[in-house]
Image (cartoon, rainbow, N blue to C red; front, side, top):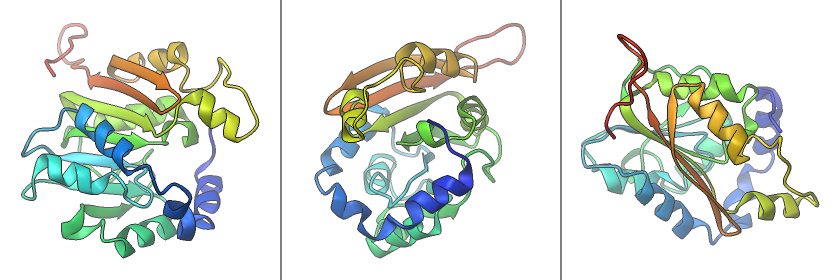
Length: 212
């Protein structure tokens, strides 16, 4: 279920201090998901909704220290935890206090976006995905990740996954294709959720998919 930014900030703000302690074994899953994003040395990448920055070191390792790795989150307490864990600056990337729906980045500035646990917290998923598409060059890639799948996550909250979940494949596929992305992979297992997409080129005559 989507949330307005204030509710998201309040929810994560009071949980930031012990967030990593609640999920101490997720590191390898983050690193594996980053590997599937297909980053190359010299790429510029955004960790959208970076939280405590668990993906930032893996992203930095993939693109090299001379290029841009930015972690953006709207919860100051989460960014403070990222800094305290050494995941900002030289240890991971630059940290930016920002709403992913209104990024202070120029269009086409990035080669890729990694987003863990983000899409279900967007107030408007379609608008958020369009904003991510805006800041990524044609042919750039997107990874929507969660360290557990939809069924496992729903079970944590005493629910079952539903077809109106924004991460359900038919709904997510429609959202991506309507927001400037070409779906390029979908995995929903107990041990992880990962949806991949490629930024389309919609300039000129018609819609063209740029090479990944």
